[in-house]
Length: 272
Length: 282
Image 1 (cartoon, one colour):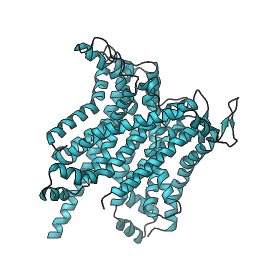
Image 2 (cartoon, helix red, strand yellow):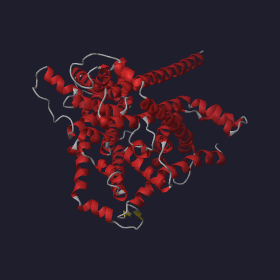
Image 3 (cartoon, chains in turn blue, purple):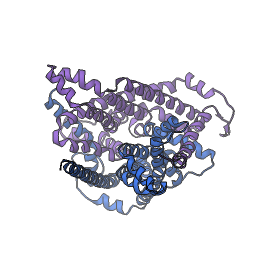
Image 4 (cartoon, one colour):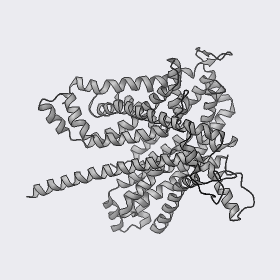
């Protein structure tokens, strides 16, 4: 533990372990001989060609995008007020409310999925993309709430106070002061919720109707046998995720940079 | 400064939604666990403890639960073994590359859980990448068939999935350690080992507890990795629940098992929060 060289070696080993399956996944999406078999043979983009002509996969991608967008909306619409409520309202049962909201974050998906399945059964609701969306939206309120709550801790309430004192309504203050100040937390939460929903399978597994989301479509195919087509679609999704991370990272560093510049200017002004 | 109307407006909608879609479903699960199924497959709404009695008397349930806990314990141990030194390295020795390395730990989280489990399947199978590689370099003459469809494959895959999860809270708690404490320890003549074990490690315990809880709880409830890579010897408790809700069609018994899992998980979270408070630096 004490020797940086040993630690460096260990870090290298962990990174290799983390990236090995991803490297294999991408490499074998170009393998003409199917998945597995060393060394890879006959590099080809044929699997991508098959993939692009595969209707059911693209239907499921579309379904997943719809579910993720709607779940994101639900999670934000309820998660942002929930964070505000936890930050600035007192009400009976607040501690229980906090626990309930955050529980899906740590609970195995099977419990969230099954409990909702029972709800929909009792309410006599047919399982469909709607039930999956409700499940994702509800489970991911936790993400929106934690992100926005963290953002609220850094927010200067004086601005909201000033806005209210100057005669703005609560509604105006919310949209013109609170939301813009929480912009980064909200965008961060939205991106996170969207990707988590795109990947989600444990909750969807129990709430699926006739239409598949992408992970469930992949799951169904895995049970029938494995083809590099799955590597190909996974590679494409991974690349999109990477782009989203880079986008988010640049957005954040840029705004942090501008905040630092602003702070520096303020310091300079004070010294004058 | 916030009026009653404002507070009601931010509180009521999430409160109602959470009550309807989280509280009611958990309560329903609780109710179901006391009901039963008739011969014709209908749910009988008569209250009794039969499901719980069955769980206690049939060894298959608690044996599977114990096996799941053992698998989860190993996953937690290995994730710690990989995650802690990595977090320590990043926090104390990575210098200017810290942010880059941090992102590198996060990126695998963006590859779908299912896809990573699938990738391990393609590596470990009898015609998989590892076996064909070993034969290619003549380390073995025939494929090793114990790699896939075993608890080993499940532990390996779940460790791969939960190492970044354990890394994150540990890294956060290491980053919060005031660096002058470490310097003071060095200045007062402590060896690096003493500084680590007496200053750094105790202060990182809240992160360790949070990471361990994450890894243990989430791998305990996993059912996809066992289905994909576990084989008959890698069945976990959630797989039994899945079959009770599917082919075996006994929702009440499945609900009873889920409720036991929920209770176990809540107890663990409670315990880890207690310990965290005890160890947190104030």
